[in-house]
Image (cartoon, rainbow, N blue to C red; front, side, top):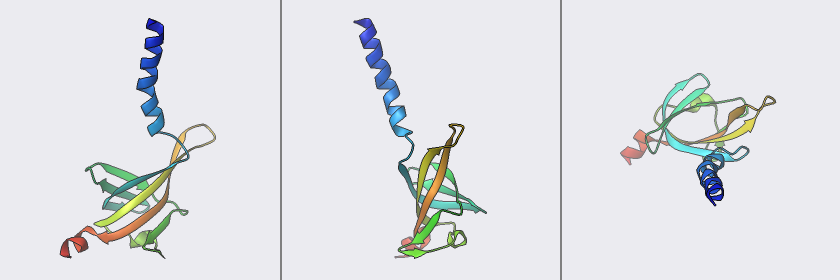
Length: 112
């Protein structure tokens, strides 16, 4: 009985971690651009957490339905960054930025 309880407790502890880090599914970060460095984008999300994302040549950047370039992203823009986790040949996790959707800048939204 103790063994069964131990197994169930271990599964309850490990299962949430496995679910949150699954590969092949899209994950979204909503926030405001705080810095741009060449192909890196820093975003402060709605909870105040900072994250850095690498923009690749395959990353789709849009505002509404209009395609944009990485140079069109400005500090203060509201964004939704969509990432996808995959594994490389060595089994190491690789996070790819699939798309960056730009909204109105935070300062422009405050003026309305």
